[in-house]
Length: 161
Image: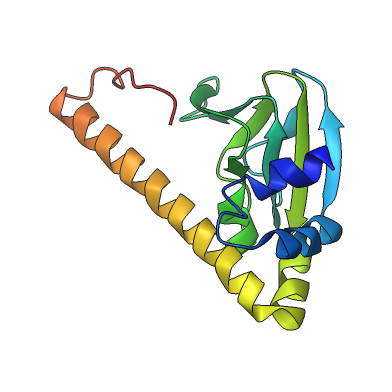
């Protein structure tokens, strides 16, 4: 019951009704992951997203062979890996648990099943994913602009994205 309530309060389920959250909950997989575990590395094959039901996850990105740097810290309710779910491309960044976490995994196959059986629910889920991608793109545009205005010296310090 606790994971169902956490899923209902997540970004992924922001537009769907409680009964429909039960449908989504029944299609995915809930797992507990201890702190310090890699969920996926940059370049890994994708095809699923995770909903963070509890704990925190760090998003990491390496550039030009340098060690990976933290891009963001995600919190309960956030989604992770949404780009890979949509386009089935390799992961564009890595993800590691910063604390013990509870995660709900929702695969591309799960989404396609919901799309066939419950297109109204799938449309609401896709809208929530689209909003997330859009907000993250806006954040990255702002960071890029601030970085360019700073002469490209250091990425500006910004609260977690």
